[in-house]
Image (cartoon, rainbow, N blue to C red; front, side):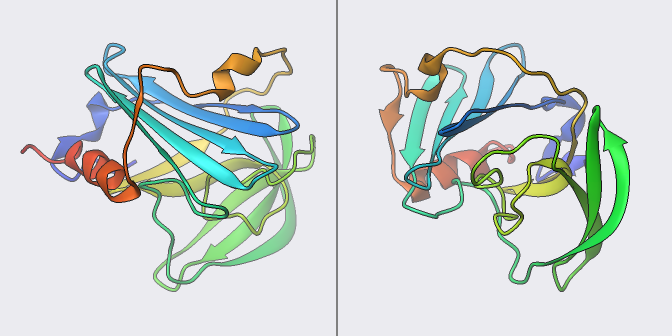
Length: 188
């Protein structure tokens, strides 16, 4: 991660993300700043839709995306070429294969795993063309450039309620959600 995201020092931002995969849903959650901030993405794999939930200092909003649309705030490079190299590494306990990525502006490596299988595993990322879950990758949320690496993988039973929108969240448009996310990285 860079030292700053917009006007905000990245050292005060959350430093980990949890991802839960099931047969029909994926949930991605980032929480932090003394439980005053959370960003959650709920991907409905059957309908190819992602809902973004944001809680910042008690303001709770969500945006339900359209079929195939990236989550609100996630940047898509103009160009995205991915090439599997066949080179492997163990990341977070997962056997992972290196993928070379070229965005036209930069080149870097990401990793995916075949140790478990899930339908549309990367629906919440720009790497939707990769059919295997990512174990190490880069993503940009608004002006925040992140490099995420799997620290640990475990199989567990989770309650289906985590894939529903809580009643105390209110719906907003995609533009409104992106404006809110962008505003989190400025001092204004």
